[in-house]
Image 1 (cartoon, rainbow, N blue to C red):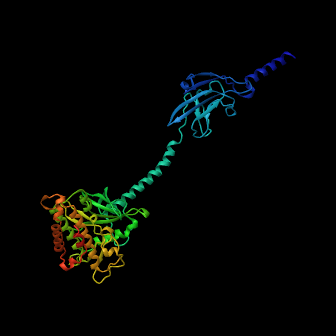
Image 2 (cartoon, rainbow, N blue to C red; image 1 turned 30 degrees about the horizontal axis):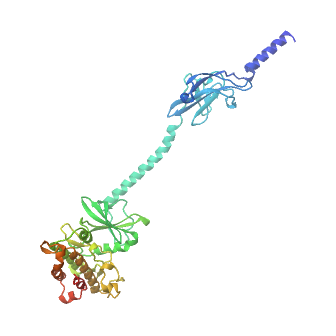
Image 3 (tube, one colour; image 1 turned 90 degrees about the vertical axis):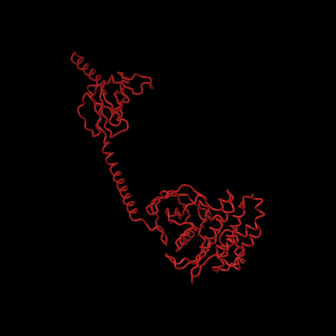
Amino acid sequence: MGAATKLVFAVFLISCSSGAILGRSETQECIFYNANWETDKTNRSGIELCYGDKDKRRHCFATWKNISGTIEIVKKGCWLDDINCYDRTDCIEKKDSPDVFFCCCEGNMCNQHFFYFPEMEVTQPTSNPVASKPPLFSTLLYSLVPIMGIAVIILVSFWMYRHHKLAYPPVLVPTQDPGPPPPSPLMGLKPLQLLEIKARGRFGCVWKAQLLNEYVAVKIFPIQDKQSWQNEYEIYSLPGMKHENILQFIGAEKRGTNIDVDLWLITAFHEKGSLTDFLKANVVSWNELCHIAESMARGLAYLHEDIPGLKDGHKPAISHRDIKSKNVLLKNNLTACIADFGLALKFEAGKSAGDTHGQVGTRRYMAPEVLEGAINFQRDAFLRIDMYAMGLVLWELASRCTASDGVNELEALSHQPKLIKHVKDLWMSTCCLSRKRWASIPPLKICRRL
């Protein structure tokens, strides 16, 4: 082999070892960086020597994050043989908006600078690498603008609806189905706020509520008791029903939708509650007994009376059909007023009382003819049933009386005949009953037991 041949062969070997014929640069060193150097117990930054098999390529890499436009380097260092890094002299990330950016390259310390070009447009690297901003603004713009537009439309629609409802308040209660309820607890222009439950009964519960600066009572019926609610409203709406000894009616409403409908009846609120609750916690003096008994009797007498020629029309006779101490409310001065007309019947001249069931009310207060099913479905029969129940309420009242002159309850037993006589005289004078009619009223027999 000649000298020239040897020279050519030597140059060939040197070229192969240097990688010149492969068109690549050999990677010996890379920039090193570790953001978690304390946890991994390594150096934070420096230069890393790359080792590997002689037949494998070696590369440099860099990983970083873009947090709201701020570049945070995660790691830099040597990378093993990876076909994706071949013949790359610059460290460039080309994926579109990855969570963690990654690039690799060939050549000593080629990862000193890194770039982000998602559209495959590689430009000449500069000394200060700047990652291109992701399309964050455009994403927020396209996402938030429609949402804000919809929210503005909803708010404007709600304001217009409320303005329309306040400008044209609905009729408080129609005679037919009230239809859809208002969206907020309004009664005309007045806000109504429920405060606490004061009582529970067969047809619903009674709330203490606030209407502007005064307290009112709200009786809430479930939808299955709509008939009772409707009947109370119709009785309260009759002409001449404004009386001192009948509970003051304010209004009625329908709240909720579909199966969640509640029926509201709004009346005056009396802090002392019912006669039942009052007698459980108190005893009454003789004067208090007479005042309560007289106001109860006046209320029932007015309810039973047929009064033509009133300003607002003809008041028919009304039978309550559920007189009991729980349905008698006491005002602050112990004046009684009658409430709860869910079972009441009105009797208009020349008209039938309708298809009604005689055995209704509370069994404890039912007259014997009602319990025996022998009731005569005439007006006077129903009125006598109310009078019988009122006699039992008077008996409850008398049993919690201290009697006159401050005597104690044991001494009061000896005064019962005098007490019953006064109650009887009071009842007769208030209800304008003849002695003959009084003698036929069953409560007299109950009073004789005292």
